[in-house]
Length: 247
Length: 49
Image (cartoon, rainbow over all chains, first blue to last red; front, side, top):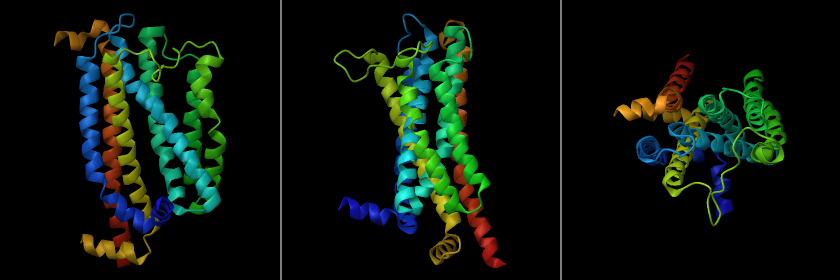
């Protein structure tokens, strides 16, 4: 049943029609979660006893950093699928995830710098966590560059798929960098444990923001993929028919 | 109200981080949504030629 559905989803026409139904609902969910997360993080969550008000930046920095790694894993899985099964949907996921992932990584780096200045006294340090996150940004930009430089979309997809799969090695390096090396960056949060390292009054708004970023990613990915599908399939009858219906 | 604009003198960093995040997320989704109309226009022009 599941495989049958996935098989149908690999058809660009089916994906375009199926995904369109989800956009209004997911957009609504994203707006509600974003507003709740921003308000909770800025106005309701208490100040940290050590970092004071500066810590509020984590409500945007941490979800952005989580998404930067999550999107890469999705891109690598899609890259692997595109290499093995040559499905067009997977190829589109790779190219669109690269842009979205680069955006989340840049946000994680910028908000991290804005947190670092008042906390560490510097915007940037060539620390293992920061450097591996910067490498992640370059990996994303590499995939974007391949798609921009190579005109044949299928060749570009194969090459970017290879880069995405190889680059996934950087994800555990980012995650464990604070454990493997002496790092200025604070240790990873222990969220799943008997005694979480974050107090519920700060954990809940963080999880709401993480859910908001996740929902936002899905909406943006669907919209970007639908645009790409329209462009790739512009010579097909179903897109021409769609154009007639729109007018 | 004064507290939220002051934030122990760190308001520039905190609001800056939130502001950049909101601007990037909103602009990204708006421009992506507008791109669909541009693509449809391009396809229409190509069909008319």
